[in-house]
Length: 328
Ligand code: SF4
Image (cartoon, rainbow, N blue to C red; front, side, top):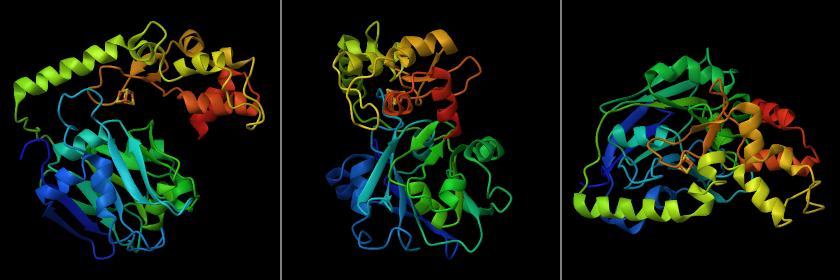
C-alpha cells in the first residue's frame, strides 16, 4: 500500500489484549486523513459516556504523515470530550505522529480500563503493557524523561490522572493534545503513557508528481508573509501573531471585555527572541519550524498561551507568561 500502512492496532486495556487488524482501503479513501479515520472509528461508540471503559481513545495519522510532505508529521487524537460531551479531535505535532507510521500503523485504538496504572509500548512488531505504578503522580516532563529512551512518548500528568475536564495529553515534552480533556479520558483508563517506536518508511506511488506537489506547497509557503515573511511564524513562532492581531484591535483583553491591550508588544514574537534568544524547533521534518525554545531548549509559549496569560489577564510581564506556560 502507498501512503497508508492499512493497519490499525487495537488494544483492550481490560484484557491486556493487543491485535493488529487491516483497515479496509475504502474506509481509508472515504475518510481521508487522521481526523477522518478517527471520527469514522468512533461510529459504534459515540453514545458512550466519555469515561466509560469502552470509550475508545484513538491516535490516527493520514496518508502524508511519514512522507517528506511539508507539515505532515501531525496526528489526530479522537474520543468523546468529557468537557463538551461532543466527539472531539485534537491535532498534535512532534515526533509521535511520524513514529506511528514508522511502527507500521495508521491508527492506535485504545479501549478498556486497566486495573492498575500502565503504559503501552508499541514497536513495529509488538505492543505490550507495562506497570506504570512508579510513574503515577509524576508530571509529564518526569514521565517523558523516564520513558524517552524507548521511543516517542505521549503522556498524562496529575491533571489527567485526576479527571480534570480540560487535562491535556502531552507529546514529546512540549506538544499538546489540548482543550477537550482527552488527558482525563486517558487517565480514566489508568493509562499513564503510550510509547511508539519504529523504522518503517512510507512508500510513495508517483515520486515525480509527489516531488512537484512538494515544490508547489513550498513555493506557496515562501510567498506567504505570515509563514516565511520577515516577521512571520517561521522566524518568530506563533507569537508573531501578537503584533498582527493587536494592530487590528482584535486582542481578547481583560477576560474578553475589551479588544485592545496596549502592553501586548511586551510579549510579541520579537520580544521572545530578544529576552529568551528563541531558537527554531518544529514537528518532524517541518521546513517552517514554528515552535520556539529558549537557549536551554525549554519550550516557549505559543500565541494563544502568550495572549491569554497576557492581555486576557491584563498582564504584560513576559517572564510571568513564560513561567505560567511552564507550570501548565
Ligand atoms: S512545526 Fe509548526 S508549522 Fe510545522 S508542522 Fe509543526 S505546528 Fe505546523
